[in-house]
Image 1 (cartoon, one colour):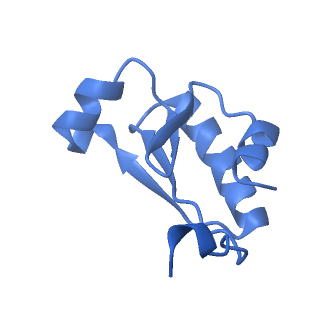
Image 2 (cartoon, rainbow, N blue to C red; image 1 turned 120 degrees about the horizontal axis):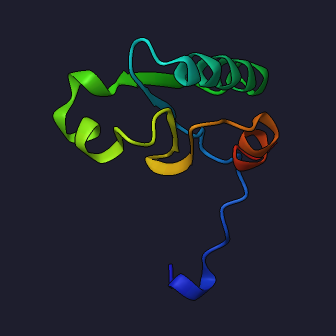
Image 3 (cartoon, rainbow, N blue to C red; image 1 turned 30 degrees about the vertical axis):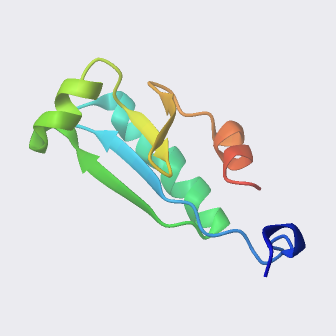
Length: 92
């Protein structure tokens, strides 16, 4: 089929991947974890947490900004997570 004749995708959007970059003993990370967990649970979105102290590349890239929230691998926010902004970014 010619590219000009293709119909646009109208199905549901693929799920987002939310990643919280954090480290142990970080009070801002604790706050961010609560926000991410609540928003993702409400939207039925999977999320993961990565400890930057266990990954040299993440530690080098983000140590001054943690906590950092990534959506689909792109930085969404750092330090403080606004639940309404996160919901909007996830399409809610």
